[in-house]
Image 1 (cartoon, one colour):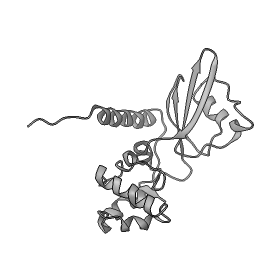
Image 2 (cartoon, one colour):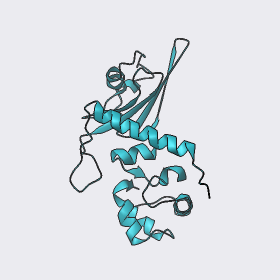
Image 3 (tube, one colour):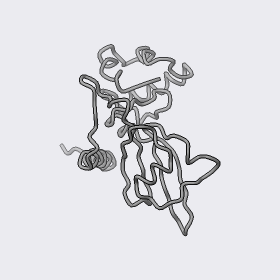
Image 4 (cartoon, helix red, strand yellow):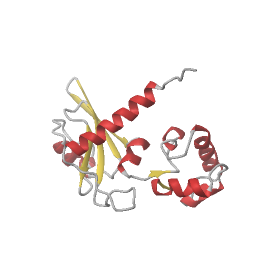
Length: 184
């Protein structure tokens, strides 16, 4: 009996492992509190992607603005986009994509994938994550992720993490397992 491998999932896992190794190798140790999957609150993680010299996940002691982020990544792109947008702080878990084409620079803001967030100890939002992101949680498969999204839609969002216990298939044991990794 042969087992099919999913190259996209394997590639994503390898990329995530590589990012963690790069962070460690660059001297950016991932701090944690004993007994907690979360890093210290003073650690802010921002991902930079696109046409930059050094893409990856960067660590800051306080939320950086776009100017500070681009300086740390040694990106030559101008950061003055929109009224004051370069001064807005980027929260932990942000993703900034820089695309340079024919002398024009575009910067798009978004969120890291759930896989990155969980690896870095950043809680994922039950109210905003898609089913693919929810399967990054320990013990959650595609079927249960779909049930969570369906319950979320029926209730117009989860008001608190404990609302997960009303989803068929989420036991007390599973809830305790995923509780540290989620927020409403």
